[in-house]
Image 1 (cartoon, rainbow, N blue to C red):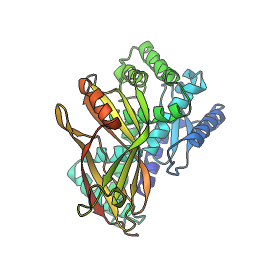
Image 2: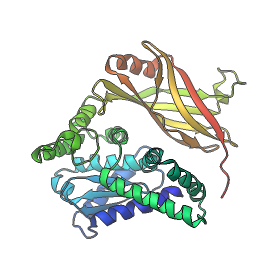
Image 3: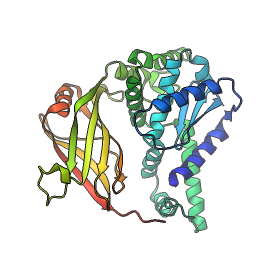
Image 4: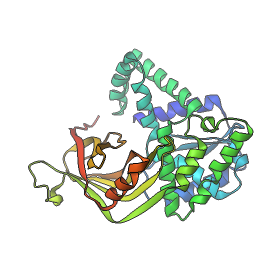
Length: 358
């Protein structure tokens, strides 16, 4: 429910800052490419109502809003020459929406906000998240103002570097499974880099404001490895009263079907490794929140912390799962090979949560 409130606020901010061209001649082509990608998406789509809107702006750019709206600028359309360029851009924006980056970005923004704003937000969200009305006029007004402020910030800056990197990874994973070579995926990024160069802008301040540098993103894609595991790696979370070898009685099962490794587009001395698959909550009664997933006992490092965003999984449900680790270049091969087939010791934190109707 709150994601819908956030969507309305961000869409409003974008439309206040840009002119939406509802009759643009390129719109049918864009919608066709969007639906083609959605029909071939291998992860289970969350059910958002996707559509593309074209906004008048000479800077080449694209924005994804929680709920399914993808905005593309006229400057970007003028730059694109090939459908494969369009596929990577749209795939990247779909990845933002499916990974719920809008909601995650909002939460990160609020962590940086003042205590008073967070206090008001906590009360408001408690009501909005269950589909109710915020009756306290002061709280409702402040909640609306907070969402509006975030919407204006997002319209100006877009997503964080971390979330841009994650969207690149998931777009590349999907497009690889659809048969698109990585060389074609970088065409649009290469043109954006050329455009930035012509405007005499540094690549870290490119058309996608606040995004990782374009050269670093190109390097990440071109030097990446995607491994489809013939034998998936399973992580079992079980009640301590149950034998550790009795995997069938695990409360939660995490399965990694793909591994991804590439140079980080954010730090030159690091590689990024991603485990991608699904997670199942076998408990038919209780929902759980998973707060962290750390890997223990690697050579030269006692603990490798994953870039894990806490999330809840409902009782008896299954959902997509991904986590990434950043690791120094000289250690990444050893960690990657261990993830593929070696022994892994895992530390996690799981909380039982109650989700009540209304």
